[in-house]
Figure 1 (cartoon, rainbow, N blue to C red):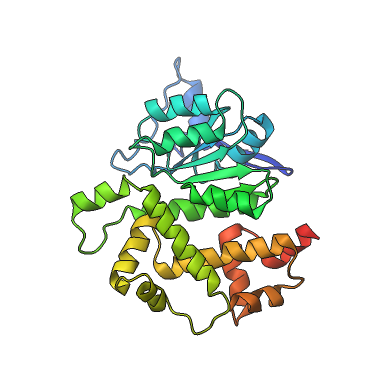
Figure 2 (figure 1 turned 135 degrees about the vertical axis):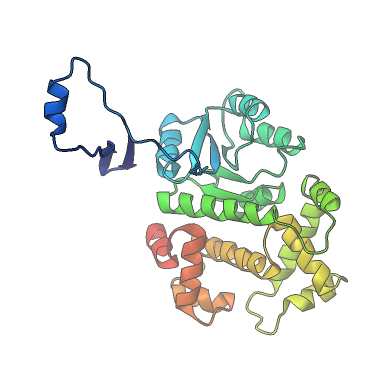
Length: 308
């Protein structure tokens, strides 16, 4: 028995019953001749693998928003909820295994999101968990600061269901990639690095991001130029980016560009998608729009419509 639900449209409930073959006598007649109803259900396949869905922890004090996010994600993910940071921390320290991703509001009673973040980042088994911060603050500075302190992404309230799903999907995929073996890196060293992302690592990523943003629109810029500027080989650059972000340098650069595109859209500095695409160095506007929708769940045109 299960159900599906779409906010604003309604719910559909399903009941699945086993199909039982009978010999000549109809099943109803057979039941009527028995003093006790005994139906032998077909045996289930004990060897069938159970599909385990990734788990998302929603930490949000607003009950309506918490329920909205739960309903939006429950088809693809197992959902845990907490109404404040203390409840979330208790859950994180007792539940095994840890959730695959955390959706975290910053402003909450008892223990706010910032305090919870500090405790997560100071705990070895939790510090690498992907985290999406929920914020009502619109300034670019706040969003960049959020990313700098080790948060993987942010969602600005209010947001739409497609945007929420796209962000969660992307981060969980990236986290799975990050766990994959890195070529020619000893297992012990790799695990130690993954569990000990430092302030220096984040500062290095900040520098990389700033250098990438400074080259927006420069068609001659290559990632090998950036590696040379950082005084490391291209191979070392690729390995370090993948280790710290779970992405190849190219995908990481693309993500930075897309976040910058969103900042430009929200700031009102462009009026059309073609203008935005050109500014970022994308020759194919449709290709750019496809990347944007995959990242944020909405197209740049839809984003402009919402802002307008």
